[in-house]
Length: 119
Length: 111
Image (cartoon, rainbow over all chains, first blue to last red; front, side, top):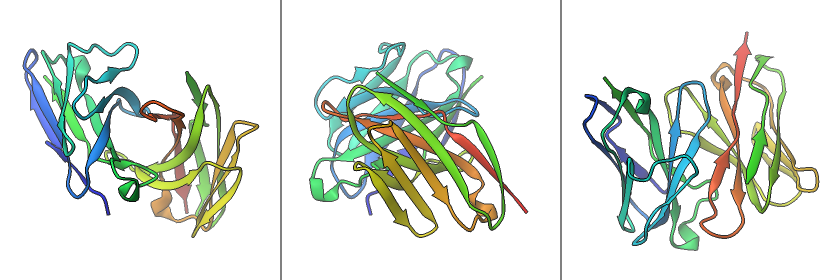
């Protein structure tokens, strides 16, 4: 079945540094990638939606200059948390929608998530 | 916009049946998903409904009423491993068809 590989799974960084999270669709082409953030004991909050080759669409309240999203190819999307602060510590997870209908899983395909801790 | 509501927590006994409800309000509806999420892990797909009615898949069933903006997930023959959070999510019509998640229901299965 469709697999999305997300790396790193865990990262600890110092306050003020930047962290890049990658999501790769391994056996299908992802036309759309959704990026979510999940704080402890809360549900997934959609941060932004990106389509290959175009600018990401950010949800209200999400700073686009802080959370840089690049979707340069149909198999790779990246989220960069710039100048990270402790309040950015969270679980970040991507979800991909396949380009081809026959590869499209109704539930979309989630990456395994990245636990970011900013100290 | 979208508004999705679920109970925060539920407790049920091993072997029993539990129903987790979800109500939603959306300007454009294009399907409802149920996901299971264990702590610290990614959500896993359980079911998808776009038409009214019941979808059954093994021990799990999901029901949808579009006119009422209502869905439920039914879990039968509960097992301890079913202890997890259950997320209701709604897909928007048009555009990028983004999926918005509800608050999630944390289910605890007790012996």
